[in-house]
Structures are given as structure tokens and as C-alpha cells.
Length: 428
Ligand code: FES
Ligand SMILES: [Fe+2]
Image (cartoon, rainbow, N blue to C red; front, side, top):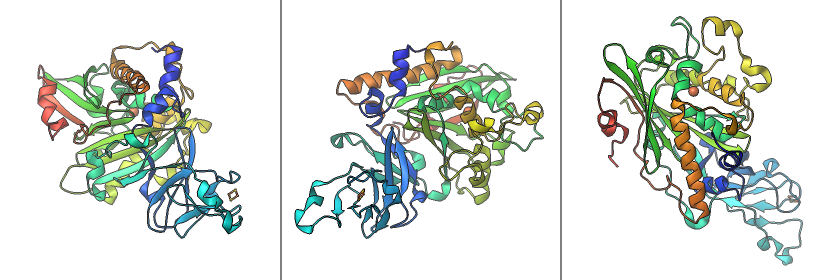
């Protein structure tokens, strides 16, 4: 439970808010790289931390992320012409480069040189791991690039997607670090269904034991479920500040995830668009010798609910709160716990159902909410640290090699000791 004031503090990310200032200290995904497929391609709208921006790829292939609205009389540059090294407003022809400098002002007399006095807000970008990343913080505080293992593998070992979630970013993140829900919300009721759902070890215990191990980037947490025969099913997750979650997928459970035979690590990033919407980036990579095949990618998209036919052009789900996520009550009776298609759509549905910003002063938290409590504490501490002029956790490189793993371990085994080498192969 949080006080109403704390709830405001952790959920609001506009410029000048305490959490907004924390968020602005990290590289954040702004778009999938394929949304800007080639030089001089059409610009795209990007909403980040309550700011309306446009991204474009100039003639040289450089990516600009600038204020959506022209400095002259605020027309949207989304309608602009992307040509010859800059984005040109189609109202009166003012043109901007990727740094926001005004290059041309054809409706003003040449001799005034007015264009040199005009600059649009522009943020640095970087392209890595199939994504365009943006940094919106103080120029002297740019952190190292987010070289997670999944951003460094060759493209065909990775699957990426994104989906617009219509609620506050923290609600979405909390769903991801809440392990106990998976055995309910995502459950398939039968092996016979072809619908997205989890089976297997998930069903063994509905009350996993959670252990949180704080690190300098956030925390690793383990969820332990007792199996028959004095064994435990242990899942080790990672939370990297401020919005990254890693989860393991290496054991072939029954259910729709089982169709992908390769060991993978998966995760999400919950990036605030504004206080009532976030863009969820979903990533999967394999550390098997063979890359992901086309069929693997299709299976992943179906399992997640991010296949092209599930999303509108702006990445809003076709199954959304306006149509009750197309819940099928017959399917809910006989095939899956929710009757909603797609694992990630199930997450979105339940989190969106809570309203745009859940009132955390009215919660009743239990023992399986331990990781959520730990994340809130870290975020509140980070807000305090940044407000006092310090650096938040997770901006140095200690998270670069971490993984999420799942194993069956004998009863009484020291999980942390048993998994240490695997959750951080570089041993940092
Ligand atoms: S509003 Fe853009 S050039 Fe006039
Ligand atoms: Fe979930």
C-alpha cells in the first residue's frame, strides 16, 4: 500500500516531476528500428514521458527525435516532408535537422538570418538491438548504452514487438514482477486447446515463495514452487531500473509456450507515453546455437498476442477495453482461465481493467507481492536520490550480462548458489 502522495510520486513522469526526472536519466526505447526503414522515409509520431515528438531518418540515415510542433506556428511535423538532410514543415517550409536546428526558412527574407535563432527541442538517439533509443535527460549525464545481452545478439536470434497499453506504466511493470498471477491469469485449462496459455509446473503451487535479492541495478527475485518428489521449480527473474523485466523460458512446459523448443530469455520494457498510457516493448532472444526461425517468430507473436492482425497501425490492440478485450465466456469455461487470447493481451486486459492509474492506497498486499513492494521502494528512493543531485541505480553497466533462468532443484538447495553462474554468466 502507498499513501496517495507516494502513489502520485511514483506514477507521474512529466517533465519536472520527481519520477519524470528519474526516467530522464536512462536510455529509453522510442521506436522499433523498422518503423523508420530507410533514409528520407516518412516520419513517425513518438510520445514519451508526456512529450509529443516526431522521429525521422534523414538522408544520411541519422535518426532525429524532435518536438512534434514546428517552431513557427506549431504545425505538426508529422505531416512534414523528409528531404535532403532534414524534416520540412509543410505549412511554410521551415526545415529542421536531426539536432533540431532550423536549416531553412523560405518564407523569410534571406538577409534576416532569423533561422539561426530558431531551434526545436531535440533528443539524442542511438540505434541498437533492433530499437531506436532516446535519452531525454541532462546532456552531461548520458549513461552508457543499454547493452543487454538481448540487444547484442545477431538480429535473427531475437524477436521484438511492441503494444500500446492503456494504463500507467507502473501498473504494467507491477504485473510483470508479480509472479503469482501467471498460474491463474495465464492458465490453460486443458492440453487440448490451441489457445495461448500456461500449463505444466505452473499448476503445482498457487502460492510460490518469493525471495528478493537486491543488486546495484534493481533486483533478482526467485519464485519457488514445490513439485512432487522433494523437488522445487525455481524461476529467477530480473528487474532492472526503471522499467525492465526479464523472465526465463527454458523448460518445455505444456501449453502454447512449449511449441518453441529453443531456450530463451524474454522480457518487457514498460515505457511511459504519458501518465495514463505506456508502450510495452516485448523481447525474446535465444542463446541456442540455432537462430530463431520464421516459424518460431510466428509462434512467439501468437503466444504474446502481438501478431500484425492483433494490432492497429499505432500499436493499439484490436482487443482493447472498448470491446472488453473480446473476452469469450465459452472459452473461459472450457479452455483458458480468462477467455482472452494472447498472454500479453491477458496482462494488458487485467491491468487496464484497474483504471488508468490504480489507487494504491486502497490495496491489501500479501506475501506474493514482495517484489512489487521492493520495486516501489527502489523507485521512491531513486526519486529522492535524483532530487538531491545524485545518480539513480541501473545507469552503470553492471546489468549487461544478466539472464533470467528456470530450473528444477532438489528440496533444500541453495537457489542463489545454484543459479549464480547462470543468472550472471560474466560474474559481475
Ligand atoms: S508552422 Fe511550420 S513553417 Fe509555419
Ligand atoms: Fe502475466
